[in-house]
Length: 259
Ligand SMILES: [Zn+2]
Image (tube, rainbow, N blue to C red; front, side, top):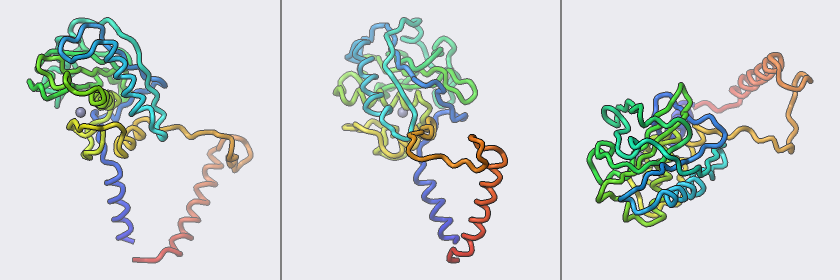
């Protein structure tokens, strides 16, 4: 029995290795999440704003909208005019590892992608492709998140092929949705860019399902069980269910081989 318990714990730990990027386990609570793009001109990333918006649409359709166990539904939004701080400002006061969101860059709703030239956002490195902060969180609800694409001269985003740009934006959108990095190299949410990535890995799907679980489908194929004959379950029917479960557990234990 101990061996069985150990194996179960090990499986649990190895199956859920995704991380979250905020202590509250926060997620968007709205049914459809939009991805908007800031209207200012990006000078160094090699794509226009409307191309960036269509890259974002490809990213959500190729990656995040495809998880059968998640209710997540994302759509491309629009090109929106925002303050110049989004182009030149620093997203966090203090370090990005201990971020206090800069008020001027707080996103009021949904996800905003903005190219940005402030070196402090990328630890002064042109190797950092972008940075994302869900910077409008209320309790366990993300209300708005900001994706900054590194628009400094000599950035590493500009010369990447189109498919790579799609997967990079998809990775940043994963952060906007509340996910942190995955330890698995095959995962989209792995901390480093990997060439040729065109789908989510199991760990990404586990993470997004944990944050945005699919509601139980009602396909009308299987009739639901009503223990007390009054439609929805009542405390009494729940008690009956618990009692039956308890009896089954006690009975089942007698049948289990002991280790
Ligand atoms: Zn990342």
